[in-house]
Image (tube, rainbow, N blue to C red):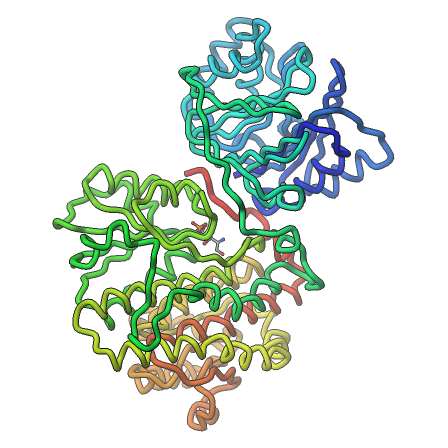
Length: 608
Ligand code: AGP
């Protein structure tokens, strides 16, 4: 899950490529490289590590040209070295290629090419592409790329230039995202719009097994079978400033503080308060079947999976639908049997997560209908599903997902409310739920008012190397999400657990150096949680409680309290997760971690 960006046109190519790479750095930051063509000369620079290392390397070097390609890497094949950095070239250095994805049959291709005398300089799968394209080159780069596409298995988003074809870039995709940006006298292509949104909001989403030839004046798209294709130009709702820090020290903190707005965006134009029912235009194409659906399978990965776990409890509360929640990376290999009229609901921020995409394709093959809740417009999962709802939360750049999680919870609740109101849920319950949802944004601001207090708690405990997060029912998945956030960005080992499971093992871990975060709002699980907290306290474990405002009882029992305003029990998770996000953020800050680009991670996992 690398990031690729390319440009052809009159702009300052060095800054367009470097600024584009910086916007894509959350996709991978093991090494970076650019290749710029000026007539028949191609200047190529690569560096290990973050974009800033490449910037240092080319500082003061005048790099001019009419076209160029650039890449930031998340290493899959070969260590993060300069030799393994992209762009990769053929032996004569005529072909330069950058790649996002995995060439699954690269071993056999490499062996065959070596038998034909080709010398390889890197350990990567990508280098086979450079040699194959050179081998097929007969005066047309696009034809050489087309032939090469026919030989490779796996996923790719690639961009290629050839010494003999200045001012021309050939891009192609299968499985990995590739978006073309259009503006007067200039054309861009990149893994996602954030790399070009400051220059244009007019884009084309290249489809699987398509390639495009970009010049400054034209874009021509065709299939791998050389059939010419006309694609719709879409307008992106994101703006240049959406991908800027706007004064925040990190994108993660910016995105945490965006949540009151992103939750409002998730509800905007989607509520009929007087009728106590939401309206979701995006699912109307399948409504006639969906309203009678009695079996829903939520499929996702990581944080999106935990949102699905909360969603199951909310659906069970508000509807008569039987809900399963499945980890996509397991689900795709299961023997699947679905009752008639089963709907699969994919949750994904990026809309490009390979496991989730493959899982829903598998379910479709087995006859299920597909729904999606996705943030990135036009992404692969959005296009694969029969209908769905966009988050409209803007770009999420911090690798650790925050605002999308609460947006997913909000939209899952709207969907459950809509279906419930078409089953047994009363008008009164519907109205009460919508009113409570509308109060959530301002209630989150009340939690932000405790930010200094949460920071002080983090300062007290960030040196502890093991943490436990406990919750029950709606807040059990929040315990898991809280633990994931802490692990992802602070590298502290943390476990999220259903509190009722403590006595069956994990209580053995409890000791005075292990803080426990107990998610304990005043809901129908409150008394059970109190007993679990007493079990931890009786083994002298420090407890940080996320509790309902004004809860005097909890204050006597635990070491620290972070208060959340009162709301309906099934809406508590949208509030209880906020203190967990901030605790993780501040612990990572005290540990001087790279909060927006934690080690070994990438924002969009486009490979299995
Ligand atoms: C969450 O903080 C992580 N970035 C990761 O677990 C993420 O949620 C997972 O990869 C799923 O991504 P998606 O929502 O884009 O499909």
